[in-house]
Each structure stands twice: as structure tokens, then as C-alpha cells.
Image (tube, rainbow, N blue to C red; front, side, top):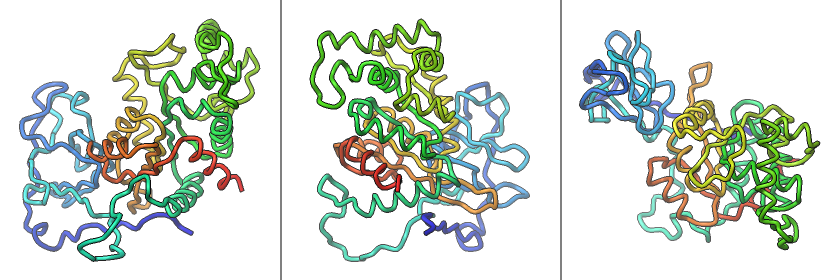
Length: 362
């Protein structure tokens, strides 16, 4: 079964598109400065009408960037990365009147019911997720070979024996092409490898071990002494876990630092903009994203991720974004920040990841 939703492009031969003017371009007045009335992008497909080229689809789009035109091509650029005299698209109308069209309905499917009143029209913890899981299995099987699957993980995934082993299995089976996390996930995953604990608590029986609160600090110290995470894994013979699987399979991972980090581990990007740039390189390639048990990283990466991708043959496919959390709050917050295409699966990290692996390993 092909899991991808078909894309319906606009009909530019109809009104108001047929009579739309070409979009106005204004040079950036200085490096890192956009001209007044610049058009800020969403993560929906965006078209710009260019003189001599007609309506052109941006190769990607993401929240709060600008569109730069270069020889009939569109580039999506963060304002801080603009260069003086870049030709920036300006205009605040998005319905075609100013040569700019934001196509929010390209992947909308016919509604099962057109009733004006229905129960349970919004996803909550009471929502059944059987269909969501089946869709996700199909998407991941397809994108393992045809896409770029990115995981955005919080440390809770490493605090349970079964969830940690399941995530390792998914990585080793090819269901992860990039991992985004913070210092904590890597630290506690390596702590589990060495001590069998997460923040000093046994990851199987959840019992506190004597002086266990030192365990993750001892791991950070040892990794820093080794010089890198990879060197530490090699020197100590670590042979299990999430980070071990990434190193073993050559899966890149980005660890973004925060104010409260212990250590941190070598390789953690302490500069927020450096971390952002590293994460964007995966967001731009992503075809499926699963963000789990990390509210801030989920929202941040969601805002970086386009809702579509242009295939080499010119066709357009959706980018799937799943957010997994115990609470509706994280999913609502992500949607309210612009990533409206994000689909929530409301459950705990252990149940989700174990269920996923038990089905995909077959």
C-alpha cells in the first residue's frame, strides 16, 4: 500500500490567479535585515508569480522565513541569513492578489461527514488511535527506503528498559535517519548502558540505587575524559542503547544544549543558533518526523519543518509530523505555533515506542 496522500495543486488558469500581477521584489537593505512589508512564510506550500516564469512553488517552506528570488528560482531564507541586496518577496496578501499564494488545502481530503454538528471532532486522550498507528506503520515502512525519518526525543525514552531497547531496534532496523535531542537523552542513555539506571533509578524495576544520583554525572565526566561520545563507546565497550545504535549505524544525531545542562557531554551544541542550523539541515530533508516526550524540542523542530516536499520527478508529497505525548497541551501548543499538520498520538513514551517496534519488527 502506498501511504502518501495525493497533492492537489491550485488551478492557476482560474480567477484570481490568471489576472494576478507578478510579485514585487525589494532588495534587502543590509545583511540580516529584510525590507519593509516582507512576506513571512508558513509551512504550507507557497507559490510566487515571477516575471517570465509564472507561478513558482517554493522548494520548501517553513515558519517565519522569507522568500528570495534568484534567476527565477525561489530560496527560503531565515531573515538573519539574508545578504545585502538579496531580492526579497514583499506583500502581506496571501490569496494571489499580490502574486503570492499560500496553498493551505493541498493535502486536504474529502470529509467523511458534512454534518454541521458531530461529537468527538477534536483529538483528546479519549480518541482511539488504531488508525493513526496503522497509518504510521505504513508511512515508516515506505520512508525507511524512500524518505528521511527524523526522531525528536526527550530523555523519558531512555528511562525505561523496554522503550530504550525498542528505540535501539528501530534505529538498527533503518527506521531512523536522524535523531534530534538534548544533552539529557544522550547522558541518561549512556548512564543506562553503564549502570542500568536513569537519574539513579533502575530502568527496569524503578528502584532507587544507593548514590545513584551520581551515576549520570560520572558518565558525563568519563565521556568528557574520552573526548567524544564515539570514543567513550569504543573505549568502554558500550554495546546497547539509543546512542550506541546511532554510532553503530552511522545515524547522525544533533544534541542541542540548554541552560540547565550538566556537563555537558562533548558534541552538545551550546550555541542556540548553531544547534538551530544543525537541526534545520534535517528538518529540510525530513519526510516523516516523530517528536516524543519533549515539548520545547517538538515545537521548535515543528516550526522548522515544511509540510511538503518536492520529489525529483516534480510531484509533491506531504511531510508527516507526529507528536507523541501524555497531554493534549503539547500538541495544541505545536498547532497554535503554526504546525497545524502535526498529528497527535496521546499516550506515554514507553507504550508508544514498544507498540511501534513490536509491529515494525515483524
